[in-house]
Image (cartoon, rainbow over all chains, first blue to last red; front, side, top):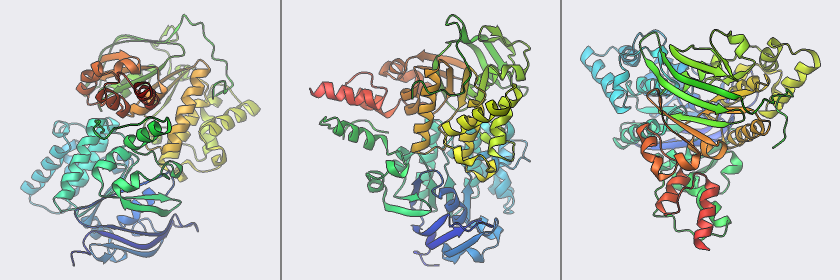
Length: 275
Length: 286
């Protein structure tokens, strides 16, 4: 595999769910090389969650439907993977953490160990992976808790830990911080930034929180009606004047500067404490 | 949106009655987790109150006490002047509507309109009045065209709006929204803000749980900060998000809204909302 091929690359990708004629993704091109973070934003129903399923080879691999174009995972066409092969390369975090948790584990520790245990690792490696994932997300103290008795935000962190423990080379995250408090959001942002900076993973993250993406993402694509309508370095994409009409809340820095300018106020906000 | 009729049900109450009163409320889960450790909280009829705090601080446990899904381990909860005591969940459902954080805990019907009709039908609405309540609630959340859809053909954010519609259709005097803006795009958040506005204009009491400090500052007149099952701050957004309140916020892993931080860093005083910040910038530069 060449260096350019590592990571996730989509070319001319369109997708229809089984039994429907509508292309919920249309002619999507995007690149997430190893070591980079790509943010995906767009109004609800723009196709973000579908993009996540396609990027993780779950669509059409597991749920069926029709894919056109090419989804390349570390240089290999996603359609040539069996589901368990794709799962070893791409880790996906679903939008609803309760979809993710196995429901069979008695403790959070066992829950996070569930995935890597299926990789047949020696016990010591398994324990190390679980401990590292819990530590990265600041939830070591949840280890003995019952996964069914977590708050929404705690469940989301545990679900993410269970994906991180698989140490996938490609990480696909569908709104990973939707239920998190600001500290949890920062922890997730830091963990993902560290992971990408290590060069070990390519990260695709669908997120409504543009303040987070402004700090975390290298590049951002804005989707609308299944198409990529803006694709640019994060700072440029998130300052684009079309965001609000595309259903995306601009970062607070951008909206406040704009509101101040509209009110005729000269601002020098560069030094102000943003996020 | 003021004056918009959300349910068609008269919710006027004598202003002397409190919508919600908790006294020394404590709750411990069967596994020993002490989620509430002595909550004293009074919310007047018509109040708009946001409960904030870190994950696991007891917010969702607290609102489940308000409609009887959970019962106090000790202390009391009164709704509209009457102790919850052993009042049945079905009876409390006429007073308090709760939209869950996770809509899939709530949705069960095979059709959107059936889902929304379930609650009001159970409190005695039928025929044209029921149809009207359902249509109005679906219109408010922007799902007017989705009545015949299967809820699970809707995306997560629309299922959340559907769960909200089911609660609005009940026409309860108290509406509790657990993380309503989660997963919503800019348009969805604006819609929820206008629904809160409309509920308040009708004199309903609105309680939300949220991590979205911008939403809290823009749409609520009171902020209650929780940490480890206790209330650690309680005041208007201007008070709680002013610099003096930041230690309490940060002790429970929260950050004040960006507008408040920018205002403080520029020495402009308390600017909890973007509008307040722009106003302060304008007078400072005048």
